[in-house]
Length: 219
Image (cartoon, rainbow, N blue to C red; front, side):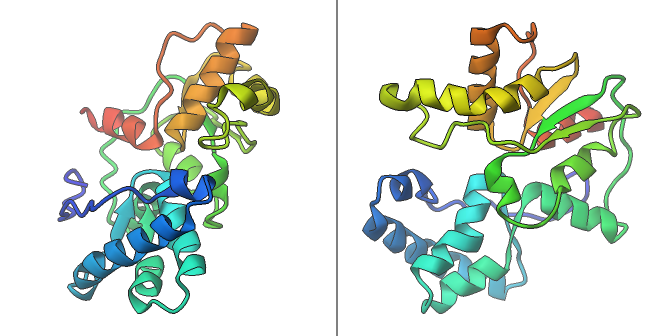
């Protein structure tokens, strides 16, 4: 954001509560939504947009909170003024405001577009963004990693979660590339599957798309 001369303030209040929603703790999620929305509503009135760096959090603010609190005006206002970070950067680009002083990568990028990114119904924004920073032909894998939030990390279900994610992992680790995922947890889960199945030797971390944008800027 600094590279693009975007003024920003940190507006974090507390967790979006997706883990609690997955456990059925709707009461806590609703309380958090109302509390957070009431704080961020004032910022929206000042002209700010709310940018979420993680797809799951963006989905909660945009979609799940309004479903849980349909009569709360602040929650509804927040949902209409929240953007995923990659969505915001592509919006800057479309408006001619994105700094294009990139140093392109020499490798192609394989992106895993996680379920919570696709559920926002904004199109392949992360993939479009990464196409700006490489001269190679990139790959976009739009399959479930099988992680399922708190479900996939539980001992009881982890074997099933790996089985569900195997198809995505086979595509993500099909060939040598810089690997990214719009969901950090999905990326870790796919790497676990890769190590278990020996699909591809990968010593590099799995990046968030914004990390690759930052590297291309020279950070």
